[in-house]
Image (cartoon, rainbow, N blue to C red; front, side):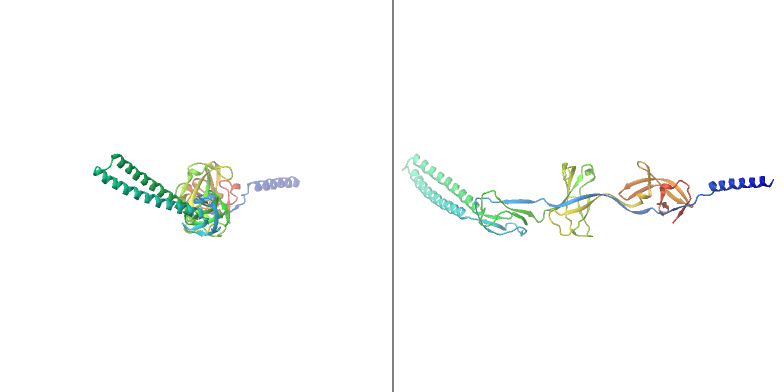
Amino acid sequence: MWKKLLLALAIILTIGFIAWHYLKPAPATQVQSLAPTVQQLTTKLDLNAVVINDQIVTITALLDGKIGPIKAREGDSVKSGQALALLDNQRAQSLLDKARAELEYKQQKLTSTSRGYARIKNLSKAGNTSKQNLDDALDAVRSSKAEVTIAEASVTLAELQLQNSTVSAPFDGIVTEQHAESGQWVEAGTPLFKLVAKDAYLIEAHVDASDWALVSMEQVVSLTTESAPGKQWQSNVSWIAASVAFNDRDAKAVAIRFPLGTDAPPLLLGQEVDAELVLEKIEDALTLPLSAMVEQEPGEYVVFVAENDKAKLKSVSVGLQNATHAQITEGLSESDSVITSRRMQLIDGASIEIN
């Protein structure tokens, strides 16, 4: 009898233990949470840019000759019209002297023929010479005038030749290359210097062809460079290329340019710059970190919200997104407590404990 009672008690205790094990309340899941934040939300396009100059000229010799004194060296800053080098001008000076002498002779000839024509004209009025003689005298004057015009042009050309013996800067700039030295013989067209304009420095970046439609004139660009750690300044898009080209990665891209910016640090030609192009900006947006959201379907998001020590699943509508945050347009308020940890282990209605 006692054995049967003990056996029955043991069975009851076993069944009770099993029931308690499976029916006991699950322990609360330890989680962390945060509240949605109202802040400015922007989307940006990160670009690699480089300092360029769109006004670069190669200055060549304009006549044959031996180079005399070099007046500017590589790295020198020069003014518009400043002499960079002098070419041997003896031949040009001789040609100018000859042209001026010929001009003086033609002018004297014109004076003489003009006096002759005046005398014959007076004789013709008195009937003392033929009309043929008057016509011949007039032709001589006209011929002398033409010869003077030609001689004047020759003087102008000779003066230009002499002027071209001085190699001058066409604008304010910096000499970046020097290709000749004193005593060297050069022919017309030989490169002598490369000059970049001081006021034509720009920053150029290439936008992937798929993103170029997001770019517009006057868009804000935030800039940084390794040569100025901690320095950030701004500029605005001032030029967008009219066609698609291949960049250095052999990918289709559209070039954009912007000024250095008024607050830019010292920058060198060819220096690399990091650029962030602001695409969209929303003030006072209700935002949530992307890490606190679960995308169930493309464009469809849910979050877990802590309510009365329970995890409640909520659908949210998302607006503007960047790399870290999203704008919440519907489904949450600033007072909500959004669970940010171990969310993938949660189910709707699960017990939670916020750390």
